[in-house]
Image (cartoon, rainbow, N blue to C red; front, side, top):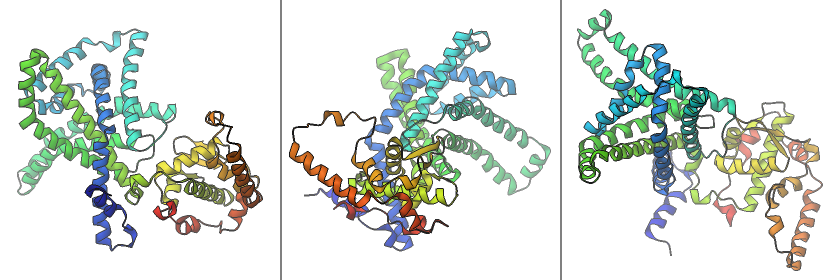
Amino acid sequence: MFSFKEKIVNKIWDVNINSLPWWQSGLLSLVRFIHIMFDDFFDGQLNLRAMSLVFTTMLSIVPLIAVSFSVMKAFGVHNQMEPMLLQYLAPLGEQGKEIAQQIMGFVDNTKVGLLSGVGLALLFGIIVRLINKIESAFNYTWRVQQSGSLARRFSNYLSVIMVGPVLVFVAMGVTGTALNTSIAQAIIAVEPFGTLLSIATKLVPYLLIIAAFTFTYLFMPNTKVRFVPALMGGIAAGVLWQTVGWVFATVMSASISTNYTAIYSSFAFLFVFMIWLWWSWLILLVGSSVAFYKQHPEYLHINAQDLALTNRQKEEVALQIMTIIGQRFYANTSPATVNDLVNSLHLPQQSIEQQLDLLAEHGLLVNIDQDELTYTPARPLEELTLKAVVDTVREPGPNSHFKSALNSNFIAIQSVLRNVDDSLDQVLGSKTVKDIVNELDTTNDIFVRNAVTPINKADKS
């Protein structure tokens, strides 16, 4: 018997969203999106990673600000550091001012230019450790299994550590300077432009927060993030940030600080700061999840419980992947990326990547671009039988140790399985991937776009 909750969930996900009118399809997509976000939030992983980032932040916040302060000093915007820190800690009230003064005191005592080579290496090592953990958390929300190349990670880290803060503070300085010009003052004197400009000025901090979130979502995950999904995640995180900040400042900060002061005395501000850090990281990860689902709407078509493909489905997906990649190879078009395969097969990226990893592990495909996850055949397709493709799913990989642990006493079972292999070999052993490609129109991707039937729950029966 299904519980009431399970019946509601099944009702939401059993409907074929493509068969509904546009307004019902949009409404159901919104309901599914809310359901997925609640699942992600209460799953515990986002919370766990946010708490881990709090600990790492406590260790690295002073070195990070010290390095950013040194870089911004070269641009003449270092005086904006403390006001920006105070703005971030504003929801903490008086404790926020005390924490900001403590941090800036530590930063003033950190002389980056006087550090030795070992000290400087340790300083940057702590910062890189923080950003590496941030990237790992983002990769989790984006279902990315591996980190990017060293060059890509270095450029992203450099952007976050140095370029990002400089751009934010320069933008603030340019905004302030522009408002003080004679042209701006003349516009302010004319209504309703004065009121509109006043409102726009008050919106600048919110826009900068959204821009900072969007910038982070574009560069931190080890995958190509489009601007619109990153912006949607930035807007969601920015609104949530301001809402939680208001609640924290008006309700939580006073009560929490009072309770902790009675117990921990002068250490109370530390606990309040850690709670605000936890909320900050959690909001950042929630916004990243919003950006992910915006860029991958296919997750709104398949319930998370149905992401585990059966062996038959895995065989079908592996054959379709090899066919699409073979089509592009023989048509001399650009090699297929993971995003291309997701758009073609209408399956979640996580399911596609699992099959790609198996095909590459067995030597059928090779990844020619670690950043874009672009694949091409590793061997001539006329030498790759369909049996070899199916075996990537049915047999353990060359790096697997599981096969050595199987019990060899069940001779009858092994005999049956060998008969299955012989039957498959008779049907699939004489036909190659090239034969399948030749049966299709390789002059375009019409097959890829239209003829591939998405796997559904009916295939699981």
